[in-house]
Length: 332
Image 1: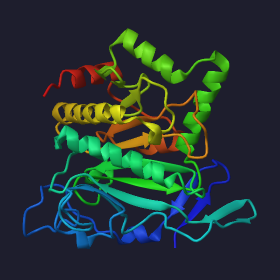
Image 2 (image 1 turned 180 degrees about the vertical axis):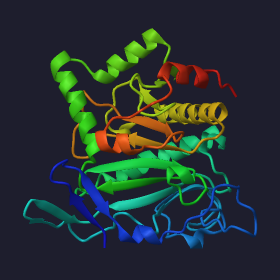
Image 3 (image 1 turned 180 degrees about the horizontal axis):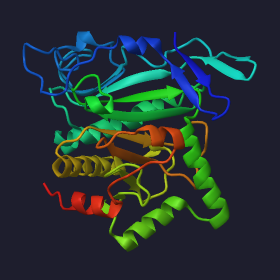
Image 4 (image 1 turned 60 degrees about the horizontal axis):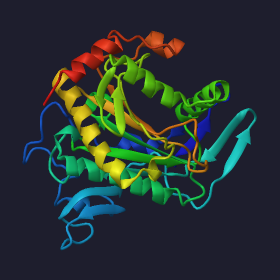
């Protein structure tokens, strides 16, 4: 059974999930070839996954059968699992709770595609809508306080299957990375009396050199202190701390923006493995004027090594201004 354990020095929660070691690993060095690799996420193979939680499908289709466009299922090898109740205990300085939570897979298309950027804009929009719908539903479970959506694209980015998919993990604790972002944004807000996200948007628009894409509702840019080469953030221009509260109009625009940014990275960098994460405010918090939901995209061009692990610093060999220019120039 999984557990969440808390590091008493760093205050960081770690998921102990031994069942994850049992998940199948499939090579992504070559595309799927009929008859050689079985794709459990493909249309027609619905029986290979747990029953669907949510699906956008044609009106004449039936649940857990063909005819879907986007499908959400429980992860067969979950990091966290549904539990009757949340239980905690201490052993001296150590703190433990049972592995309560949920781990879901968002299967982004019914056919054998590896990259979200190659899907239609309408398909990507429905993926974003599925994110919103699942987060809004999980928010009703008072035992859960946060949901993280993430995508591992390519085996070097941690993907075990090449079929385009992303994942959602909801937990009874706020991840340390989210907590640190919220606290840093709150410190800035308290000192400057304005949102750091508004300040970032204004400065990036004024400078222009780090912008990858600018649309009426969103800005995509390479952060000033990028941790990774070609790291790109997508920020909404209108204040909204919780992704589950995003408007349908913004969902439509976001689908275009995310597809375009990922397409630029694919064209500029030769289809690299990448991760993206969606950072959103905790469920149990009201609208936070100092924090804003956002996507962070990390192409996996270099590896984190000893200095980074030991110091917490990151070494980035590409200036964000140079990265943004290369991505801007990577037109379809």
